[in-house]
Structure formats: C-alpha cells, structure tokens
Amino acid sequence: MCAPLHDRVVVRRLDAEEKTKGGIIIPDTVQEKPMEGEVVAAGPGARNDAGVVTALDVKAGDRVLFGKWSGTEVKIDGEDLLIMKESDLMGVVEGAPAVARKAA
Image (cartoon, rainbow, N blue to C red; front, side, top):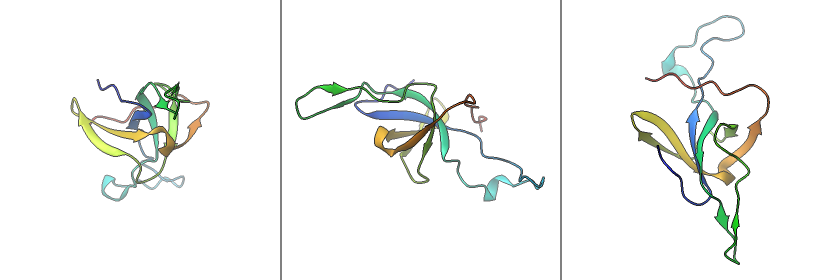
C-alpha cells in the first residue's frame, strides 16, 4: 500500500447509486463520479511555522466527502485511488460504515 506524506490522505471512492429512487437504472457511462470515499491511509500531519507536526483530523477507515475535482487520481496495485490534501476534504460522514467500490 501507499503511505502518504505530510497532510495528504489516500481515498478510495465509494460506489455511486446505480438506481434512482423511482427504480430507474443509471448506466455506468452517464453516472457522475461519487464525491464520497473511504480514507485508506493518512499522513502524519502538516508542519507549522515552528516545525511542530499537527496531526490530521481523519484516520484510515473514515468515510469522507470531497469536491468533484479534488485530488489526484492514481492506480496502486490495480486499484483506482485518490491522493489529496486533508484541506480538500469537506467533512466526515458519521454513522454507516463505508462500502468499498467494486473492482473494475
């Protein structure tokens, strides 16, 4: 696996809804990329001006929300992942556990 540096996190996108509430199936070609994911790994934190490392607020296993164009897409061990700064994350989803995306 990958160990991110500083205040970066590695995120696995979660599956998008394949059906609308009315039961209409949405084909893969027109589905939007999900803006929700699971943190796979998190860096140690960012250094402030005094050189002190400030720990991140997220940890591996957290379910997070991020912007549509956030992060850099990478492929690690055949899996599509995103690497982004913690500041690109908009929030942590509390409650339901993350459901991993199916391998393509």
